[in-house]
Length: 145
Image (cartoon, rainbow, N blue to C red; front, top):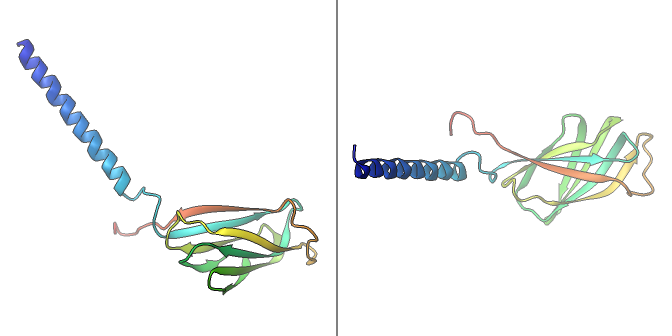
């Protein structure tokens, strides 16, 4: 084997490896692991008082929100054009959470806590210490579509 042959083979392997890396990175950028697209926003209230009974939220700044639901609570909402008003009522005090369908999981609305009712069904005098956590969940595609 000559040095020239070894040099050619080395460059052939390096070129193939670089091409493979480029193809894999393109698949990652364009494939299902991309973080944009339809899905759900999970919204949860954290309270310094522990379990709460109900809360009123306003979601603003994003179009294409729909399908508001909760597994543990009664959820009512009103579309006000540029914002959504959401009321969440628990039968038994606990963690207040709900989910919202969205056209783009990258576009997170501004969530404002308007009122909170304690475990005894009385309104909180202050919302100090209450926090909202929003997490995105991309809609899974079924059947390879």
